[in-house]
Amino acid sequence: MSWLATLKIALNALRVNKLRSGLTMLGIIIGVAAVITMVAVGAGAQARVEEQIKSLGSNLMMVMPGSTTASGVRMGAGANMSLTEDDAAAIAREIPGVHVAAPSNRRTEQVVAPGSNWSTQVFGVNPDYLIARDWPLTAGRMFDEMELSGSAKVAVIGQTTAQYLFGDADPIDQMIRIRNVPFTVVGILERKGQSLMGQDQDDVVMLPLATARNRLFGTTQGRMRAVGTIQVKVHDGVDMKEVEDQVRELLRQRKRTQPGADDPFTVRNLTEILQTQEAAARIMSILLAAVASVSLVVGGIGIMNIMLVSVTERTREIGLRMAVGARGRDILTQFLVEAVTLSLIGGVIGIVLGVTGSMLVSHFAGWTTQLSPQAIVLAVGFSAGIGIFFGFYPARKAASLSPIQALRYE
Image (cartoon, rainbow, N blue to C red; front, side, top):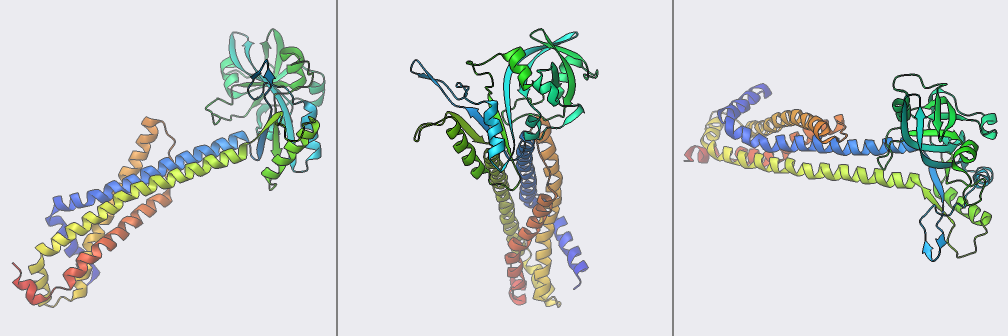
């Protein structure tokens, strides 16, 4: 018997029991749709973490001042302004694996422009800060050496700050005021998006480090060159952990920290933190797909159950076909085709529902989803495999029937 004839017989058998066939496919439909939707949600979460990794900058670690104790009360990290610009220069100069070490200070300030004002984060930085953060400019320029050393009143602003202060107007060469000190906007940063903590990284104004300290922030605890953070960018291919240990050892020497004493600073390896989050997102994606795959297995069990019932109901038909010359292989093929057809039709419907479900989750829940062609192909292939696996036993049972016993079956 040809494959085309076998397929026609199988489709006719399924068409006779439309309701039962539809209910049998339901498990596969739900399973495929769930797999596609859950994998899309998991892939979206992983892509989100990767975006955040890129927004922070690659191979990055952060050095911050440590805690201090006053009147028996221990303050939090950053309370002791023990880091200086000289420490940043020493890290960049003495540790071979370091690309740049960028010192910075930060305060929240009210920024005023003609006809508008906005509260934002004001950073005192040098050009190395943008290199460390992999943060290019979309317009204008960064500070030059004369402006850095001369405490020039120039500023580079983020996209959000530019929008709130100037709207659709070009901010370049426009004037802004911070604590009544006028600054000229010389550059606009490229958009970065949200940080890991959900903060808008584009809501920022950057000033030359000396300008921010001398004209706005003032000295801190009498330290003229004190900084709040040092961003350390490591060369590609260099062991981040090794550089972290070298940074820690160098700073302990510079701060004359006694053996066994706590570090007067904190080193955070952002790459390790982000890699951990990326691994967690990947595991979540796998778990979601595994949970959704249970629906496919349940659907396969439903196919086996219905096919066994179908074999029992059609025993006399099987005996009659064998009596007129049908071989066991023909009967086996017929029932296998029926099982696989149920799985494939359910798989196609499941794809449509899965894609639709992913879009609905993204629209209504606000989650980032990412449809994966591989997941779609895998889900359909898995559904076909389930049809073959769970349909083989009923098909083999039908093919092994004796024609005489089948014709006698009541």
